[in-house]
Length: 232
Image 1 (tube, rainbow, N blue to C red):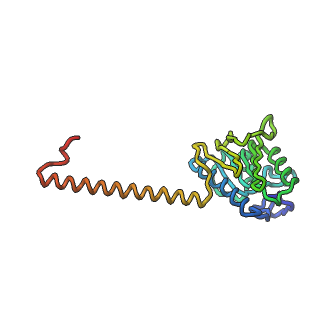
Image 2: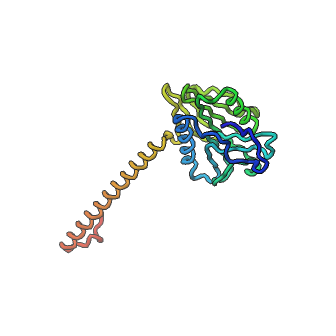
Image 3: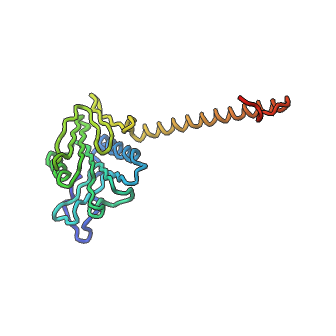
């Protein structure tokens, strides 16, 4: 998203820039996939804030810098919770350490350069740019106080997130630190449904075994044998 190009003295920190979240379905699917899987990955970490398309105001004076809305951003050291925008001076001065941008054909070179300049200036440690149409992944890592582009040789592990990027001939694959792939919402729903079905099958099997054991105990009692006194 582009920085806001206007200033309203009655609302100096608007929560929308009036731009669409995504320009096409593929871009939208990617940014949702990354954001939701990161939410799952850090679900048990109360000190990790993950957001998508949220305006980030690095300083309170908009004359110095307007906001930017990364497609996905991750801020370690900040609590989860609802926000209309990320106002860094209200977040103990902590900048999002990791940001993602998923490109569409509408992104101009100037816009991409402005994003890099913004993230470099305001303290992002890891910056990932994925272009689904060109099947191209750029990785920028803060080194010597500046974001530097790194060579990932089709494979990379995020220092902050621990996730593994693999650029195959056909697509970008992302795996969590345990080796589980990032899945889209449909795949996650199918996985949950499959897990529930297996749990139900195990519960039914356990119930059958309990009933069988109870029938066997009843027969033993008819024969005058107390099953509670039997030893293995």
